[in-house]
Amino acid sequence: MKTLITILIFSFYSYAIEIKQMPIEFTQNRVDLTKQYIKNSYGSDVKNINIIPKIIVIHHTACDDLKDSFNRLNPEILLTDRKDITNAGNLNVSAQFLVDFDGTIYSLMPETYMARHVIGLNLSSIGIENVGGNKKSLTAEQLKANIELVKYLKEKYKTIEYLIGHYEYQNFEKHSLFLEKNANYRTIKHDPSVEFMQNLRDNFPDLKSN
Image (cartoon, rainbow, N blue to C red; front, side):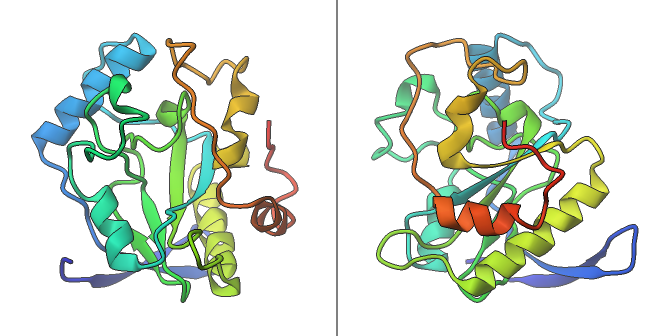
């Protein structure tokens, strides 16, 4: 994995959040693949891959190791074992953030670049991946880190209105933010867990789930 550089990002208010940099591969090829994904799935020709964040989507990686989780997200091309989503394009899955078991937060890519992490909602969402969800459950430290990260994002981006678990994305099928053109392109998700999301959501009663 790449060298980690710790940075402190200060909110507009009175607290600071520590985020470590662990960037995934993001060359012009990934930018071009992202534009192609937007064209194929959302029907839009775009000049850039910038998003206006309106939703925060919480995930788990289903890998119980930080390095393994990073290595799933790092390549620009979709891994060959993801045949369930290959038809939607060769862009690899990714997310803006990755949170380890001990609560360490890693930035993987720019917050307002589009990541492929949730069907139909990528152009309006920031994804937070949590290491775990295979044999190891998510931890109290991860919950605390997610609370801090959501608070940071909510205060930085006033456009954010929604906080959802990945398993809840299909609730947006008829929402104006849901853009997927292919009605057959859906996957069943269970991450991160209902309990984790409830504990997280208790801290943000003003953020909607649908």
